[in-house]
Length: 434
Image (cartoon, rainbow, N blue to C red; front, side, top):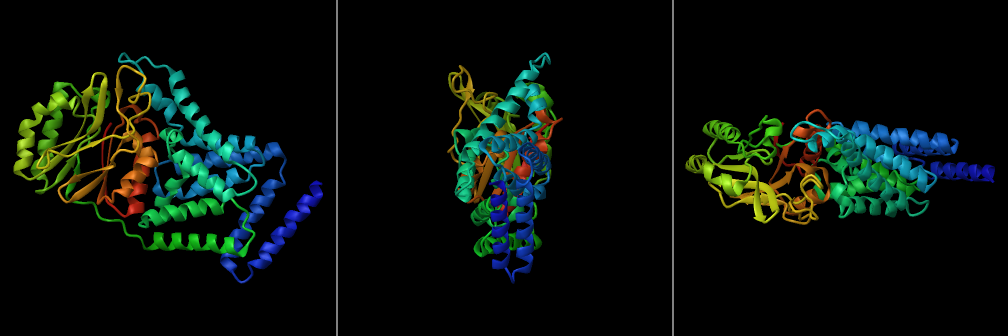
């Protein structure tokens, strides 16, 4: 039986090669993928699983490392998954990918949940690293099958982007759009999904080969001709280095230091500038806003606006994390849609940030539509899709990343936001507290 199956595979490969005659470059590339798939299929089951899992882990390590261009490797993960021969193999391959991509969570989450005295429980870090990875790998396991692969890939991508799984759906392969199709926006997302579907099927027909070749050619052309927009002089990021001290943001000395930094930047910035401050540096904004009256007045005189990261109590035990405008456009605000689950967003607890995954993804400041994402939500697909739908003129990201400064997480956040800005052809302004 095994021999007849192998002969059938070889026969199909030969037909596909003959059917694609005359398409030299596409044929060569697609034939390489077919030969690779056939070589993998001929391996013993355990060896094949190990090789594909190592390949997926390598993609997770390399792609999620801080370079936007390396996100172009993400289709290789889908290729590894598609070459599994059972749901168990598909699960192991996907799990290897997510564990590698989220490697920084072990140290980062342990630090985030450490006590004020510095005591750390590594079990928390391991749980936050492993449990979401198991959940996301389970999606790829359930969606794996031998037939209708393009549909299965699309369903997996959608499940990993939308709640409830999408609330921990980081490292989504769809993020490759920023590397593959810069400036193409929604069409770039569709093309990226097309690439992910193509690498999941055997390139046996002339139509499939042509589609894959056309998508690769379009990606090469766009990357060769894309020119990133210059940094906008109207936006200035005010980065801070307060470390863990900004966890509550209510220290008076820290606030005065931050105000001094804002005043200094404001004095050298152009009129109508927008100053962007990191997440939560303003502390309890309902109370601390009063201490910013003089800074707000000075900004208003220069027709400038500052977006201050803070939190505001809206009900007993419930608060919102957001960016609050002072100065020329002091009525503007943006509220985080997906605060960090467990760390900030705990609907079951007596104290929790508010979450609204489908909430507004931008804030209007004068004639500008500022597409915004705060810290954790930058790693997810849904918040950025909502922001895209609101047609922003600029992307702004903020974070309070003191807990992860020794990990890969800050670089990955910047990588993801840069990828979305590149996909949309927009400038990116990013402010962080480290």
